[in-house]
Image 1 (cartoon, rainbow, N blue to C red):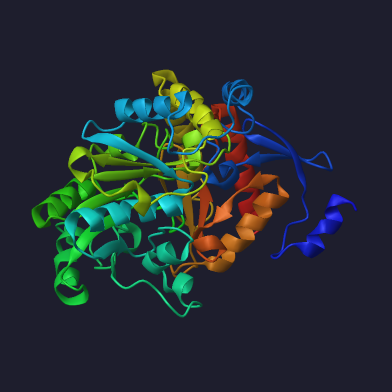
Image 2 (cartoon, one colour):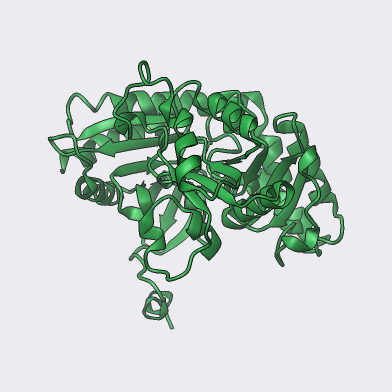
Length: 419
């Protein structure tokens, strides 16, 4: 049976293109068409497709040991933990590798906070995306993700996010006094059980629309949590591993969380592995309380070691900042000619373009149309909120050159012309 015929067996609809090869920021389909992958697979290929250093590490590990139970040490898993402690904020000194992806890492972080504090509730920003498992879905910040399912974990407290372009409180950063932090107190008092264990936040929202917090927000949030004994968790599954032009968004914003979760880009070119980093004082939850069959995967850990050694290089991170600045400048330059481009925002190579109607309201229809036009021009992007939002998300591999950044911007302009 030909591969194309297999689409009739797929549980969900698949696109027409069959991808057969990838290299760097480019992929090719079975018809020989070349695409610029501006979402890095599923936001996880920070080193792009088939990065030679990652492939060499994996091939070398294949000859020795493909997998070992997380009950045992291996050279790659030892080295991943050493590197993560060396490279992360100094207060994060312990590493749990027993998760396999962002959803399970986030759940593990919440479990640790609940176990160590003896409290229950979890604060999540509006549009916050914790993950796709039933537990993570219970905490997600959009009702659309929860509505189809009859049962949810109790204890999610959803609060307005620092979305300055559409401020919940109808304020501006220069006048609001950071209400998006201070008024969380009202939600704790009136919408929680009174027993708050943690707040989990993406330093820059991913699925929720690439919302970048205003200066000082995360520092103020850390103070707020410290004053109330709330564990602050940074979900760096999308922002980590160089995406912002710093190793972690915590570095970019100069704020250390109590717990940080990592997955997606941790292995550079697509191998599954996740990590939970904690402060020393948060050690204590028994290992049996959170673990998965393929956690601490040996082969993936070898890929992670190669990735960490690559992204830690100052010249690599400088390249991310340079390419990101070139791309965002070009995209912002389109706003004068295309009023439907309401906002262009981002840090490093984590960018979002918000589409609006003439009255300034969100335009999901234009975002969907623009995403299709970009695909037709062989640029792969995504629409926020799992395709139902109004923000075009751009997360190209961090090996994107300035030349390719300009090519993406050129095609973006061509796609806008079609709307």
